Length: 419
Image (cartoon, rainbow, N blue to C red; front, side, top):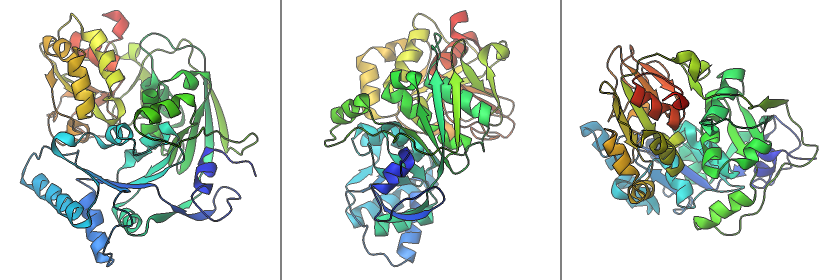
């Protein structure tokens, strides 16, 4: 039978014949991932099931990115558990300190994920790697423990929603706006345990970084995975990051889809997700005048070099409003260095920004930018649940880097073109 992208990737990792959606299959995994919050739980389960060794020391990645550099004693103890386990198991890909970045930006950069891979991670935004044509999804720590021990796990073959984007992008509109627009249309449960397969001329023109931004937020629509075909652009990215042997990946003609959406982006402005759900999406112009106290540019969604360049283009020659705390967090050490070498740091510092180390930090309300009651933040992160970035009485608005930067300058949410 013709296969869509999800079915095609799963088929490559199982000896069972995939005959349609809803089927339960056991698949070999390409990489198992956990971080400093989720790995200790997985390690406890791993030892509880009597496992003595991970299935492959080169196919387990442990990335301490959420609370590091350690913000307190509890986070230090969490990381110690992960560090000791990595040493005991001889895990090749253990990262903290100067080698560590936000996991979903770091692993593609290291060439550890790519087309046709199956990646399971104890983090919901593992779906980021779908931007490279990988079936990548988040799981609970117990399932991750099993995958670390066995090198395989089971999946229910998901149904797929095909989303085709057409039209012409307006200035200051990009990948973040494309995915926010979709989430706003179908809702946070609109793709529950389904694959989102993105296609169309707008998608073809997107950079790989843009595709990863979109795949990253598939989970915010309830998606199991967000998938892009692997084209020549994908293969070039993977080759540049040390991978060899990858091949083009496309859905088969006549493949089955649960639903097909056609979205025209012509005339669409920047989108902003308002509190307290990612599907509460409105055009930026409808929010003009809404005061902000903080702006955060970074995270596994928008902390890559393209995102920092986009923010710098808006901030150059300008300064953040005196009442706004502007925080910029490059997602990996390599991105940090590249931004510095390109002179972006000078622009950020001249704008009054705090440039921090590669960390998830404020995205999950961890550290380096916690909100007090009554405060409002505009961020390039992926979630705006109540209390996500601090106080239950604070508010988080999700936007692209240009909108976040412009809003920092204006002191209120604003279209970058209006500065």
